Each structure stands twice: as C-alpha cells, then as structure tokens.
Length: 354
Image 1 (tube, rainbow, N blue to C red):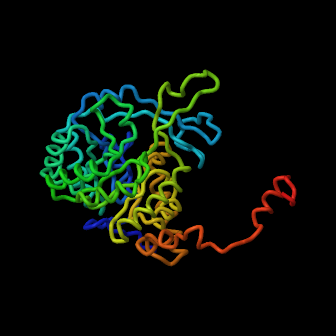
Image 2 (image 1 turned 180 degrees about the horizontal axis):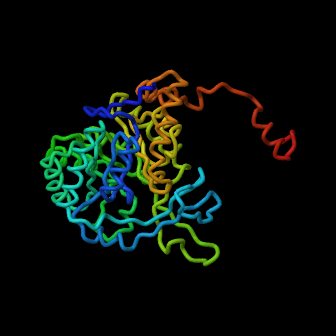
Image 3 (image 1 turned 90 degrees about the horizontal axis):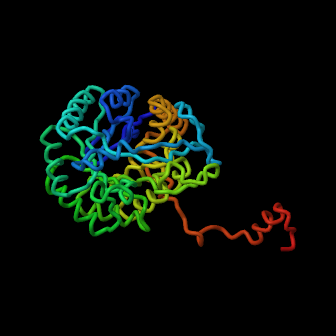
C-alpha cells in the first residue's frame, strides 16, 4: 500500500489532502464528514471579530459554470471543467462557540490521526492576536492565518484584510508568531505580482508553512440579461488555476528552499491534481471548491486515485515533493528545433512558405 504520509514542519499528516475552509466546513457535521472520508486535516470555516464580515454571509451567491460560461446545476456531480464563481461571507457564529467546536473536533480528530485547523481571517490585528492566543489556550493544534481572502477588496472596509505587500505580510506574521507557539500556517493571495516574495516574507515573519494561493477576483457579464453575473465582481476558481498555482509553488520552493513546507491550494480537483501539486513543491494540498461543489465523496475518491498513482510509480507521497519543480529549465536550456513552428502554421492553413 502506498505511503501517503507527509510532513509540514513539526506536523505529520497521514495524507496530503487538507479539506480547505468553506461553507462545507462551517458546521460540525461538515467537518466530521471530511474526517470520515479520510482527510489528513480539515480547516474550519474561517472567522474573525467583524460583524460586517458575518453579515456578508446573507449576501452570498454562487454560480457553477462550464468552460463556455453556462450555468451548471448544483447537483454535486460537476463535470471536470466546472468553475466556481461566488461571493461569500464568514460564519454567523460568535467566536467562543466557534472555538469550542473547533477544539472539540480537533480532539476527536486525533483518534483518526487527523487534525482540525482553526482559521482566522485578518481584520483588526490586535483582535486577531487575542483570538490566536485563545485558539492556543483551547488546545487546538494548528492555526491558519488567512491574509489572502480574495473578497478583501470588495467587502466592507475593515471586515477582511487582503495583504499584497511583503513588508506588511512579514510584520503581521511576526506579530502573530510572537503571540503563539503552535504551528502557524499562513495563507497568501494569488492577486500579487510576486507570490514567492510574499511567501518569503511570511517565512521571515515566522510562519511554519505558507498556503499558495487564494482565488482571483473576476467579473463576468451575463449575455442574456446584459447584467453582471451575480450582480457583482466575485471570487473565481477552477481547474484552470492549477498550472498557475503549480508555477508559484515551484518558484516559492526555489526561493525559500526545499525544506520549507508549502501548501498548494486553488485548482486541485482529483488525486492526480494532488500529485501535480506535490510534484510542483507542495507538501500538502487544500481541496476546497471541489468538495464544496462535488460533495464529501471527492475526498475519498481523490485519496484513492493518489494512492493508485503512487503505487504505480512505486513512490511515497514524500518522495515526489518538488520532483518536477527541481527539473524546470529556462527557455534557453531547451534544445533548438529550427523551423519547428512552421508545422503548426501549415496545419493552420497559412501554408508552408510563411
């Protein structure tokens, strides 16, 4: 049987599939379903102190789209090209009962060899530090600090912070690191010219791992109504994002070193996608939209596919981390094939003499 175990700093996960934070991990029942399907870790729906961020949940909307931008039914059987376009908000739950739920579920997860991760989205830094200390005092074993929530630029000012500046990332992470000693995973935005620079800043601030990368913001007109789909800009993710995430994983591995743990997120839909992110340098992978839109069975299905792949390759999960990333070459290192491009021009009907 393939060895799926992996390490993120001092934490050993029984497998590299982390069920990411979303509506499907808002309640205890959803988290328990993720654990029952075998997830190595589950990130509870993020919280902070902002009432505006909680009220945003009443304005959420979701559209599942195919590759031609047609709406798909929300039937938990999406095709492979399904893309999620949505607004979201934070759970409408007070911090104390949220933390009690996370701590209780994390204790129960130990019996399965799994973890339940507390996730804080930054709004006010001082309140975030208070909440981080409370998470540690409650005995939760891992803290995720999300400073890359895609909706940060659209939400009520101050409700959710989206950080794109390396100096601010380093300073924020250093403050949180100074407040707690438990493992600290920092989730970063993809809405940056240099995600690897932000990863380096998070590492310098004391992060134990960084998550690469949050979804993008997008705008899509509805050609029938001639209005914005969902009425607003919205966060956008799908299988198309996988190569973008893999590129930033590989660049971050090169910049931060092979020993620093990276967590891939945004684009994984299958066990082979988990393998692709591991090969790009991730030590573990968060699956979020795939579970939210495809159901909890996506977890066990992806783990079975990953195990089959590793068995065929005669490798463990840890064996393949960064293998492809470490083989990336420059354009200049590729062998020259003079005139090769003409074959494609000819196939396009432009003729061989172009």
